[in-house]
Amino acid sequence: MTFKVALVQMAVTAVKSENLEHAVTLINKAATNGAQLIILPECFNSPYDTTCFPKYAESIPGPTSDILAQAAKDNNVYIIGGSIPEIDNGKVYNTCPVFSPSGELLTKHRKIHLVDIDVPGKIRFREADSLSPGCDFTTFDTPYCKVGIGVCYDLRFPELAHIYGEMGCKFLVYPGAFNRTTGPSHMEPLLRARAVDNEVYVALVSGSRDETASYVAWGHSTVVSPWGDVLSTTEHLETIVYCDIDPDFVDKVRTRLPILSQKRTDMYSLTNVVKRK
Image 1 (cartoon, rainbow, N blue to C red):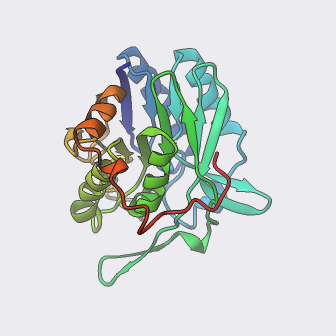
Image 2 (cartoon, rainbow, N blue to C red):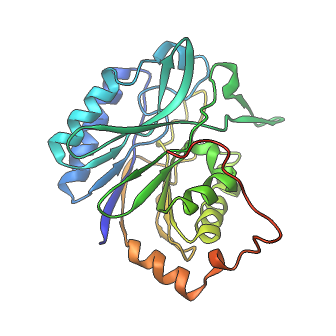
């Protein structure tokens, strides 16, 4: 069953209430245009800044998740709520909440791998200065297919995508915020690699670029097919990227090129050591 996804590459400001109002406006627009699963970018209600994460952090459920739940219900769509700074038991996480068309909070993914980058003369950013890592795999079922969730830097770790593939996911979604140093060289190759390695659809959803921000996003929200083709993408300005996802095409690719069944498990294996969700 083919379904339409919308990647909401929205502009993010320093005013949380404005971000939430704007996100709902774009969700409504995407739903009006036929999207059945709508995806927001990483840190869509907060500047992507380690000094801001504790200030903007809130619980889930909480004000932001309540607004997204209502938007999902009002539009009868699935919403992958990008990510927001979440506070729980004194720790702050970079967390992606997911909502059903009835407005139910289906699950939430706490970013597992925290960014630690230091490129002299270009960028230095350490999420661990204010965030704690998550420790769970996160998937959810839809009438179309099972979906696996990561957040940005999680994309760099092929083990996560591989385990999601083993768990039956046909679509992997990464709300993200690559920057102008890593984005041009790394983002698309990583997306295509995760797609081809696991023969799944892969999407990354970024915020739009703000040249005045302390962290300048690369943009270029993108969907890649199980064959490794870029199906939909954009540049750095605010927009909504649409793409049709065909779960049956995953099966066709895996039949034509059955690499998943050709692995030499007598020689190597990847072990999931935490409880599957």
